[in-house]
Image (tube, rainbow, N blue to C red; front, side, top):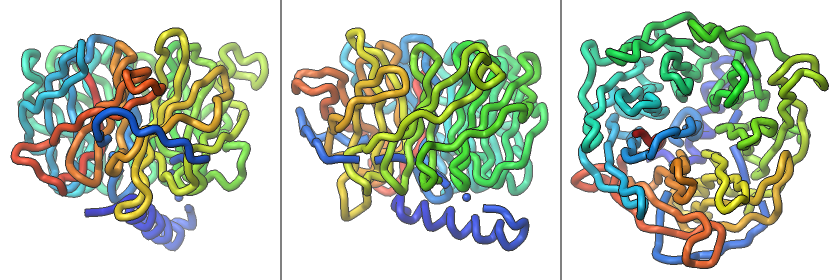
Length: 415
């Protein structure tokens, strides 16, 4: 199965082809100084071959269900989640299109429908969710085409569940409207002019969508139509203060909505940006100003997923550090955050086995990651019994029977 190193090489190959054909380039994620605390039982937390981690869409309900894409064998798995303990129980797996394809996954806010992007067959797969056990049933038809050769990757959905967006690794971002009754999505058009868009997230209060480009290192804010989701490139793209940080992946925004964080896969740093909520400093509400860069636990961390959460009155930034198969162990970093700054070095829970996708539960108690290297999902505890801000926890297989090569990538909670 592909390692994260393989992912980066795959990007480079695709970018080279783009440079030849269209004279344009490519990028993706995060890392820093070593401070490892291995607490509790061993745990595992996962990207794949063409991009990097899933961008987490905040879960607004209880998060009683969980879903994980299995990139290598073309499946999506379902789980129930015990809210009090965070324990996951596998309830099934269904096809999500072509193998070496399923990556991004997002659930509707009410937990009635699920959407999976398949980067290999250019489709968005749609499912209804069993409210009791999370098992999935394909809608009819089972998918919509995102457009030939668009390579759909990561997804975001608005809090009303009426609009959905998809990054296309070939250079587009597509908008969809969602029928909240049937769950069916309908394309509202796409916007181009990117190299390799990957990370995608919505501002919590402004009608602004943010997308990271894993070839140029740029973060693109874009306004969207609140009825159709149609995007307008009416902001200036921003780059990390480190001119060499050209591989951002997932994006996280803090609870106040005024700070944005990304991580760079090659340099192993976290970069922060201030978000102008009024337009007073950079002319338009939602615009970005580069702020700082911070070291993670190791320059070879290859961080992918990022998320933020407030626990016991303290805000934390978490990164899923994939590491290298057969080399540096994977890990999850926990930074205390305040505005655009974080405390370094981070606390690190390790070893994990190739974490890529990362999500925090609505109760802000547990961190889940998809472990790309061994077919599992792991559960870590924020401020757990190990005495650290992030504690290792148990793992569960994403498929039954266990398939160590399933390649878990994206993870989402619902209901």
